[in-house]
Each structure stands twice: as structure tokens, then as C-alpha cells.
Amino acid sequence: MKDFIVAIDGPAGSGKSTISKIVAKKKGFTYLDTGAMYRMVTLATIKKNVNVENKEEIVDLLKNIKLNIEKDKFYLGNEDVSEEIRGVEVTSNVSKVAAIKEVREELVRLQREISQGKNVILDGRDIGTVVFPNAQLKVFLVASSEERAKRRVKEFESKGINISYQEVLDEIIKRDKMDSTREESPLLQAEDAVLVDTSSMSIDEVSNKIVELVDNLF
Image (cartoon, rainbow, N blue to C red; front, side, top):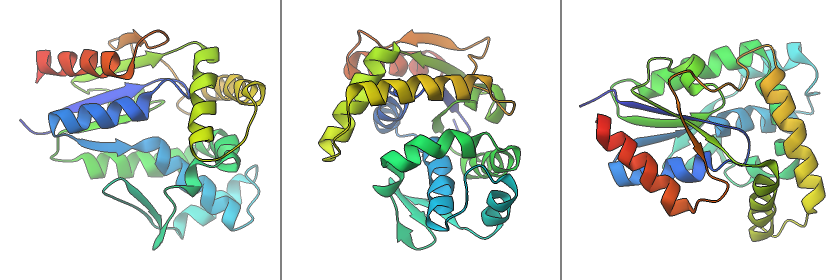
């Protein structure tokens, strides 16, 4: 079967990317990290000294940048920015860039184009509600803000970035509010999405649960 779409949505730090990669590998699906695409646009604005509040300049910039994804590597033009897009500055600003209508429209178009004729798992904030409302499987991952902050601190520590738990928690709460209240494609659980609370689940437990859901439909 081709064109089987798994849409995984949820707030920052709920484990979407980690779980999606594992499930994609287990099922032989293509994994498309949509959040990374927004991070790449955000990084481009930072590199070009464009104010993230300046919508017009960001829309102009979008016309002149090339995003490329190859084997889990992310390229801005010819530059590998896989590590840079996970930095604190990008993380702090990505929600502002992702809220811009024209940015979302262009990246949604790219996501649909890349997914054509493939079995794909995508994660983000609006995959099941906007990008692929007819996805065969929709999953909405959640976890407490405290648990998500702990995960993010560990992630930063593993990269040698020193940041306090409180700072990360405050940022997550701020991002949740921005993502769920923005005008364009807010973070919402699709009516037909399966809710999975990962707060007290291991990575293996969550990935096995989603593989089981895929197997029941695929």
C-alpha cells in the first residue's frame, strides 16, 4: 500500500520527533520532520538578521531560501544546519515564525509534495487538522509541562548546553500558549485522533503503542 499517512501532533517536548523516527524505522516509512522545516526558516531569519516580528521581511526571505532534507540531515542551501536548528535561539523564536500564514502555506505545500506516493509519518502541530486531515492514522501525543521540561533539559545537556529547568519550563508554557492560541493552524487535537499521554510511558512503550495502531490499519 502507498500513500499511507500517519499524522502525529502534540505540544513541544511531547516526544513527537523521537517516536516518529522509531515508528518510521520499524515500519519502513518515510519520516518527515515538519517542525525542523519551521526551524530552518527561523534559523534563516536569524542568520540574515531579520526581525522575527517582521512578517513582510520573513515572507520575502522565504522566496529566496532553499530547504532540503536528506537522510535525517537538514540543509539551508548547501549548509548542514541539523545541529544549529535545535539551538536555544531558534527554539525561542520558532513559534513566532510558524504563526505566519504565508510561511505555513508554503511549508504545508512542500510537506504534501514530499509525501506524495509514499508511506509517510509526519509530526507537528497541525498535521492531522490541516496538512493531512484525511490521514489514515492520527495520534495526539501529550505529556505534562513538567515532564516535557525535564526531557528538554536532558536533551540540551546531552549537547553541552547549560540551561535551567525553570527557564525551559517557562519557555514550554509560553510556547504552548502561542501554539494553541495562534490564528493560523493552532495546535488542536483532531476529532478522530488517538490521544496518547506519554508522561509516565517509556519511549519503547509509546512507539510500540503507535506501531500497533498502524498495524491495525495498514
